[in-house]
Length: 427
Image 1: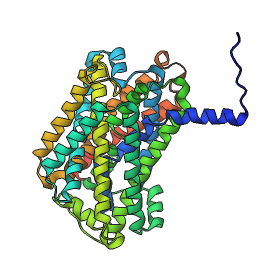
Image 2: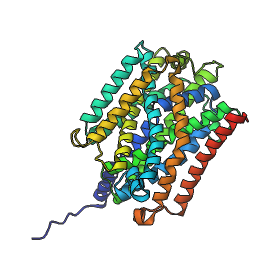
Image 3: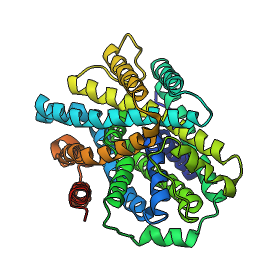
Image 4: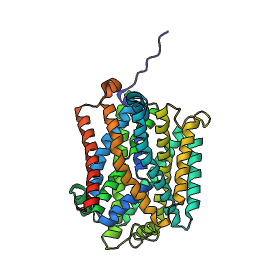
């Protein structure tokens, strides 16, 4: 008996293709939204407070690099069905994967600590003690990730990301910025020689292009069981994620530039009430709800980062040793995966309790600098793997993609060297 033949009109075929592409969306959007976590918001706020619109060009440049680095990571996941750490272990051995994982986990733990700092700073605006915010955040995240499923976790991450984006989009509009000056700063770099300027540049890049983000996109693509046929949809996913990441980052810079820098207000970002002062600076422009809007956005972003970064750390560590990974596994089926994830959350929660309240913003900012300094160590492995024709097959990086990828890696190394030079010599 012959199988029935489905006669579909061109319009139906088009709809089916679009549905297939939309079904791929998720990893790139989640990664993009999670880039605007507590560390990202604090860094963008510091950039706007200290330098006004001048660092918007960094966001545009980093968006281009972010798209290509995330695209490479997604392509690795599509071609191999494996995470980054597992591939490095297979191709280069335990020593090299241990080196890469060590660099990544140092950066990741710093980011997780920054998320708790964000929760503490946000809830501190409402008088909640740091120890209560840390306990609450740790409990919510652990319960979510150990009792959820891939689909539920993904939908929640995307929903929170959209909420954070809307909060800061509204903040930027209410601040009534100089859009002409912002547009000019976006395309015309404003350079300075001060160490503080370059530290802020490095932090801005480090909060956009992260070691955890590079590993996360590949592991999440593999966990979603996407294949080579999903390349078009995943490129759209990555492109949207990269665009939204920096668009919202730009809104935060613009809001703080208009509310603080442009009116000559001076805010010490290392002071214990720095977040409150930054949020309060919007009040004359946006009304009494500005503090609440800023705080809710920071809190939501912190929870989003707390959900993603420990998850990525557990993915990477388990892949390095060949252990079961994935949020669709039950706790008893993947004890190492969930055990490590809980450990990273608990360690960061305890650590943040030892940090004085006055250093919360500085902790979030410094974590992004560390991200940028350690990212090249991860990208070198990514670029080498993506150029392996035997491993990648038809998804191997061509000359153009290789050139862009290595140029981005070299640029990050150059930024690190500039940071060191300006810090030591003050030039």
